[in-house]
Length: 256
Image (cartoon, rainbow, N blue to C red):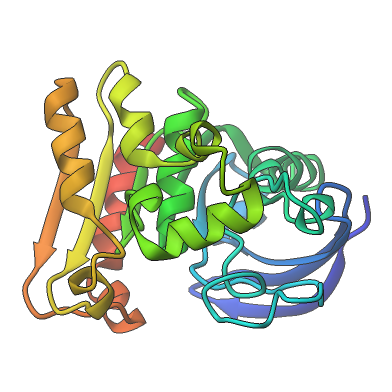
């Protein structure tokens, strides 16, 4: 596997690498950023824990129809493995994030520790982070999310995406990608932090549904969820910047 390095940016004493590679699961060129802290360049280098961040908006493949709306296709792959044509050939972000990306990164950056990985995300990426964590017990040390889509089978965004990617009549398959459904079968502590702004228009419109997730956690008797409703904060990166230190600290507790 060969990475193309598009940029190397000095940052906080380390380096931010802007990388791309040809992915087999998505059958296209995939781009991502990798930050290596100063400890990664020591001699000998330390083993560095990893915190994966999933974006709320992604790029597409110029498939007919994928650019017709901002909340489906190019901007919103929802981190599923699509089963419906024409998306099933390349819209396989679940497999990419769960398997292919970590495999190639750990292979080519031996200073990273594959045994110490946490995951986080924003909005649709928050959905992806929660869902991947809940579907893969033990794979990630912890999870956190900003304004995640917590119950996609019951919100307009999720219903639109799952109908297109997974098929309208396959609600059982939908549930496999829905965090509110998945948490009902969780065993053990969650190690989960969620921040939601009460000034978030998408929260107000019923797209995020964190209360549904919180209710499912309570009914399942599961411990370890910290969910914080932030008065007046919205869906933007300003909210993320305000509380990102908390999310890094949350991950660090489980990565040491």
